[in-house]
Each structure stands twice: as structure tokens, then as C-alpha cells.
Amino acid sequence: MQIPQDIRFRRIFKMKSPSGSLYARSFLSALSIAALASTAGICAASADPSTDAIKNAENLMKKDKYKDACGKLDEAIKANPNSARAYCNRALVNDRLGRYSAAIEDAGKAIQLDAKSAAAYVNRGWAYNKTGKYKEALEDLNRAIELDANMPMAYVNRAHAYNGLKQYDKAIADADKAAEMKAPHARALALINKAHALHMQGNNNDAADAATLALQINPKLSAAYVNRARSLAKQGYHDKAVDDYSKALKYNGRLAHVYHHRGLSYKAVGKDKQAQSDSETAKKMGFTPSSTKVADPR
Image 1 (spheres, rainbow, N blue to C red):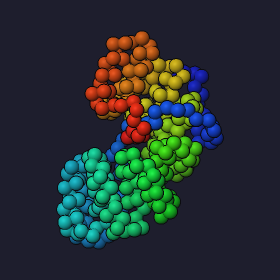
Image 2: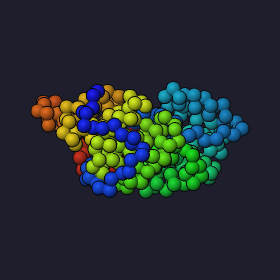
Image 3: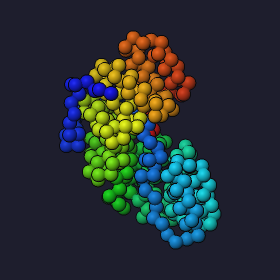
Image 4: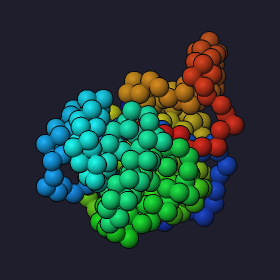
């Protein structure tokens, strides 16, 4: 897709963020949930009777076979109820399966068994993000960074928490920090978090640029399309916004808020029938414009 010429391509990670802010519904959207969870880090291995089951589970997780992986991790925990690694991994699996309370519980158990597990704090912090508990997420992610300052996903997830708390300058700083670590997937997620923060500050040109950079790393990131679409729509490019919202839905059709916002752009370009259809779909999926929770960024 061609972006309008007046949206300039910048060195996103070297610019200063603006001090202004723009009120808008706070949401991110649809990154690859499996990739984000797995990149959060697997807890360190140790010799115990659960090792084989855990390794099998990790292989299944790489193939997105989360239900099967959960079964293997259940076996691992039965074989060794004191395996922090098994609980840490099951927290990831429960997150992928939408069992956020269970994910928080499992990550908490991993922390009880290994208080120095930065990965467990990252995973619980992300589960808190998923449930809109941004203050709790921030506490866990701060602790994770204290334990290991070189985990890109800790900064990516903390940037999301800062976005949820509307602390956009801090979100941008964490996104920049994650990008400096040169892990490609983490950099893409950091760019999406940065795009959201810039959009909320009213800097829509730079927000669109950040989202475009994320798509250069991974052209299948629905969140990047959503964030770019929002910024394009704010600048009046509703036809381009419709294209990006549609691409986001191609890669993740479960995003109720995307149907809502695509409907608004359809209406802006005079396509009332499509606008009405999207509005109805969003409502059926449970979208409520009054929601203040930052939506799932994957």
C-alpha cells in the first residue's frame, strides 16, 4: 500500500517525542500473541524428572499447539510440583488460551519457586496487561528489569503498561530501549507501542512512520496496520485507513474495535452500507466505545 507523500519517513528512534497530547480511545491491536509470549523468555532449565515433558511442551508451543503443550506441562508439574520452569511455561500457554487468571497464578507460582526468574515476572506482567491491571504489570516489569536489564520483551511489555497508564513519554522511552537491543521481533513490537503513544500525543505523521517500520520487519502484524490506519484516519486519509483496517482483519478477524473504526472510515468516504455492517459486527463482538482498557496488542 502506498502511503501519502506528505507522511515523511523519519529515523523514528532518534526523534524527540512531542509534549502535547490528544484525547482518544486508548487501544493497541493484534500482534502475534504466540510470538510475543514465546519471546518473553523460557525459564532456565534444571535437571529434574519433568525435563522431558517440558521440552516436549516447548516444541509444541513453537508449533502453536497450545492445548497439547498444556497437557505436557500438566504432566511435568505432576512429575515435579517444584519446577519453576514448568509453571513459567504454562503461564505462557494459559495466556495463549485466554486463561489470564490461570496465567497470573502460574507465573506467581514460578516466582514463589524462583524469586530471581525475570522471565516469570515478564510473563505475569504481560498477563496483568491483558486484564487491564497496568499498575500491577508495571510493578512486575520493573522487577524483571531489575533482575535482567537485557530482556527486550520486558521493555516492550512495560511500554504497553505505560500506554495503558497514559504515560506516553515513558512508553516511547521503553520502546526505544527495546529497539536498541536489536532483536527484530521485539523491535517490531516496540515500534507498534511507540506508534500508539505517538498517536495518542497527536503526532500522527510519526505514528504512521513507526507503524510502517514495524511492517517492514513483519508485514503480517495486524497491530501495525491498525495503528497506521488510526493515524491516517486522523489526517483525513480514510480510504487508505480502510485498506489498512482490512489488512489487519485479514490477519486477525477477532478485533471488534477494528470493525468499529473501519466503519467510521467507511462512513467518512460515503460507504454507508459497509459502515453500518461494520458497526453491527463490532457490537455483536462486544465492542463498547466507552471502554478505557487498552485492547490486546496482539
